[in-house]
Image 1 (cartoon, chains in turn purple, red):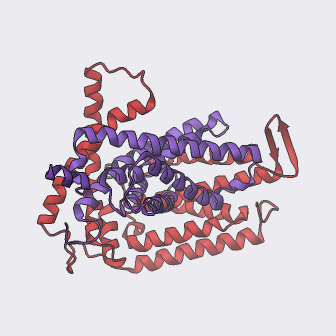
Image 2 (cartoon, one colour):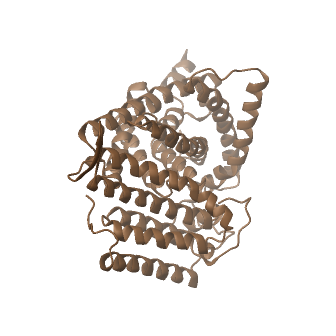
Image 3 (cartoon, one colour):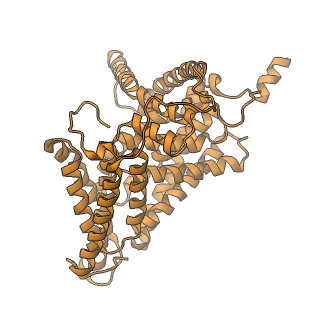
Length: 195
Length: 261
């Protein structure tokens, strides 16, 4: 339908604007994360998954290749520009998490947009963040029971927030009708014309 | 990147943004491979000095910015201190097990978090987003359609914050009480903010396409950003800082530990 390959300016701009909304959330999430932390035993890890949500939501809305990666990079640079507590770290984490989510969507050839795929993307992003933590935070040196708690909390949190919550958020957005403006025409749309 | 606070423009503001970003990224990755707490402590002290002297912000404001770092230092360091593995026990109480190794590792992680935060703040306090994206287009060949989209997006942040307050007021007027779950609450704000943002993005995109912002042809720039003598000074200073931190850390250690792993 469109002559140019890849993302068009409208897609890029929409992705970036959505991501900046999440960039603000990411920024506000930082103090919240540190507020939960002192309660101990890795409660903070349960809410870590919020930092993967931009990729899922943007992909579910726009449904094109490259959107998940761009969204995660844009959201993390938005967070960085607003002066994140973690500084440059968020940019690198953003790239890695975005790549991991994008890889999952690519595996399904950008054809599936259901809860299952989004949850897989959340798990994949979690693995990406853990790889970074492995280099940065010596997490392997935590006591085994403590490390197990840490991992379980982060995976569960990621699936709940960037999987289940992200897809319910997009479902609610679909009702408002804005998603019709940005999505490429699907097979059902053409079928509806034939009817 | 805080426009509302007056600051003195220092030479750090005049260095090339792309170069600054790349140097910061190299330092970031370099710090990941430093396992000697002495070197890391020296380096973070050098960064603190750079932060205080050359960002050009009033001292009061810098101290205010520094406050959350202490919290991060403590929270990053504490979980490794309390639950890390080690051989020489200092204190044990239930699940809490503080050893010499885990304590030092925790301190090291604290300083590492501090270094990362300082690198980020040094960059964001001395770089204007507009110059950054123009520089990325000119020096690193970022595609204009991405760069201008980012710039347009950054400009929308104040509008979004305003909308956020409108939603907040609307909810208050209608007497929506806050006793619902956190997800319900986020949704209540996210749906109007996202849907308005998408509509606005579509309108801006149409306007930008009409003005050929998306075209791939060679284009000229309103801001021409190049290199100057300040870039040389910046590179030199950073190299000297790293070299001195390394030399002092090896020759005059504060802590008799060379590797915290």
